[in-house]
Length: 96
Image (tube, rainbow, N blue to C red; front, side, top):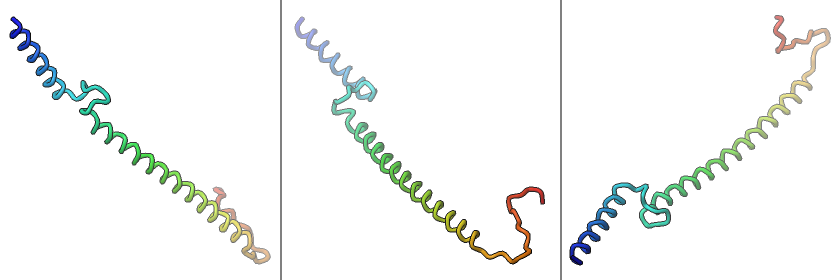
């Protein structure tokens, strides 16, 4: 009788191992089976954080460049001498 109980216990353990191997979601967090997925997940988040930081710095740099260019254009257009009697043209006026 003890032999049958031991055999049944071994079969139950083997069935659980087979089910755990077939279903990776059933692996408990912190166990050895889910470690590689978790490490990959963390690595992806680290890469995304680095990319996000680079994008933010690039956008800030481009904003400052655009502001600088707009200031240069504004200064240049305000310093252009206009001949006397020349009508001013508004390039943004739609009534032409």
